[in-house]
Amino acid sequence: MYDVIILGAGPAGLTAAIYTGRAKLSTLVLEAAMVGGNAGIADIIENYPGFPEGISGSELMARFKQQAENCGAEIRYDEALDIYPSSQGIVVETRLEKLTARAVLVATGARRRQLQVPGEEEFLGRGVSYCATCDGAFFRNSPVAVIGGGDSAVKEALYLADIASRVYLVHRREGFRAHKALVERMHNNERIILKLNQVVDEIEGDEYGVKQLLLKEVKSGQAEKLPVEGVFVSIGMVPAIGFLANRLQTDNGYIVVDESLMTSMPGVFAAGDICSKKVRQVATAVGDGALAGAAITEYLKE
Ligand code: NAP
Image (cartoon, rainbow, N blue to C red; front, side):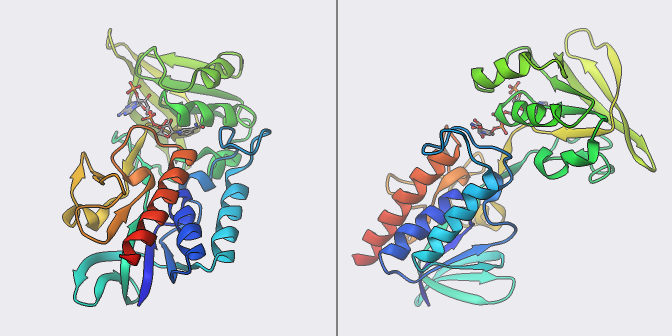
């Protein structure tokens, strides 16, 4: 029996663990994949306060982890498969065991959205990727494409511009969702070639991997073949909700919470990118984590 079980060791989950650990609540953090979540694979994070020169996502998240552990939290690699209330508390069934907690925090974040075009699954790991910092090095001096027009896509394009021979940024509109400063940096980078008002129809290749993208101009319908060896899909996120969708109230797949971040199941809280909200950044996830940690501490006192 733990006081608190936290699902997800990203910025929100680890921040909450720092708070509940400092409040002397026994805290277990379950991580299904990699500590740090999406933030942990960012090559550089430039808008998190306290690091004026920027900091790599892996270093920042290693510090979060260290701090949570210093505060007494236990971090374990295991995946929650179900949660439900019982007379003993909230049961968390994982791949390996059945645990109980007095309160649970869901901080499972969000995953990259798929394009869902022919070739995307077939060439996954053979040219198709969702993470430039993880896979970019495979495309040294080769042409690649990044799909999307948000912060992630522009950041991926800028990162790849230092590695690939050229980077095509394929976006379905002319306007960018990405922050103005990032867009400006992209415009000033001569290795990035914009392909605007274009959608991907298909990713083509052979037994060795991706060879080209089939694009279609949105207005005219005109087709174009783009010779690339890497395709980085960066078209937003979908909530990592899984089994929780059947247990908790959601809005468009994201968990609905009240002002103290409690979900529709009493004793179960949610924080970070998994929550229904407008801004998803490390700083906002940290804010959520702090709020949830304090709210859980208060809830367990009562
Ligand atoms: P996003 O902001 O939702 O942008 C997704 C982009 O993909 C949009 O430009 C969208 O086009 C395009 N798109 C969506 N579905 C598509 C489809 N089926 N085909 C083609 N294009 C499609 O997602 P994100 O860039 O992953 O960012 C997610 C959140 O993390 C945002 O809140 C962002 O600010 C934050 N983030 C911040 C940073 C940072 O450094 N501050 C870095 C990464 C992410 P439309 O514009 O036409 O809708």
